[in-house]
Length: 130
Image (cartoon, rainbow, N blue to C red; front, top):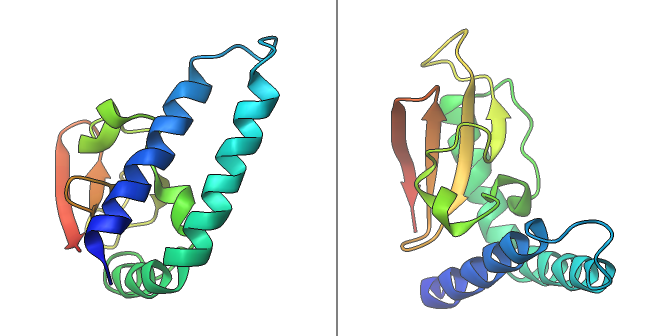
């Protein structure tokens, strides 16, 4: 797996999500940018999906076996500022065996590419790194 290319495309995808998030639905550029984002997501899932889905299946099996694995793009933060996993609403909610009863999320972040388990406001745990 070319992790440099994975990281580059992951950053581009998150930057597009961030730019779209700054537009209102009434903005004339919104629909075009949303279509560009969907195309980037499709390309990302096509190129890196099989690799990342294997990774996600392994992580889910170890940390949250009762939670379904989603497409890799579901695990992305909405902006690069959220790449630390600090925003507890980023990524995908999971039912973590290690932290039962606590809201836990998995977030796929760049620089370097890794999965962060975010629990509440204070716990950030790297659970996989490319």
